Length: 197
Image (cartoon, one colour):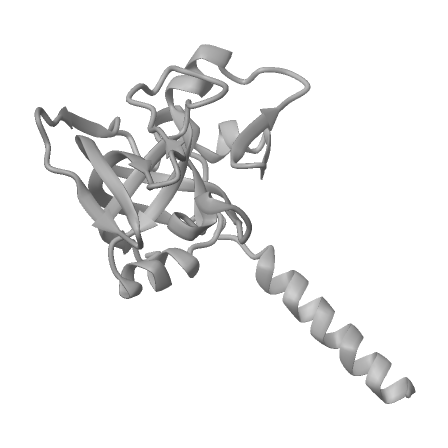
């Protein structure tokens, strides 16, 4: 019995380490460019996993992963299992991020600090929580392997999602909004994690 308890404890410790591992970076901006977005006019809807996705904009980004969270319940999780909190510009700089507490839950991203290292407007404009809808199983696997501190690059479409029951999930089209409907809903068509030097 004691042996089984030790094995269970070791497995729990390994899982906790694995789930909370991260990539460390020296101070400095790692992803300087803002996300790229171009409006799509009169787009044809896409059908994916039994949902209709209406493209709103072509979208691409290169950003630092601030946090990851997986979800398993609700219609949202049918489409998007993983949320990534992402930062670019000053929000990809370790000297800024080391002064912030970043968490995710309930499909939102939150930050806190005892003293602002930059303005709250700049934090909002240079970070976002993104719901990722992988276009393929291979992309889903790549997203699932992402850890905090990774530099990711992906492109696809910002979409609104609906189904036959009248359920609807809409994307943000702005990097400066907050609160409900402020997250980007991204149909991801290409996804890469940059190798650390």
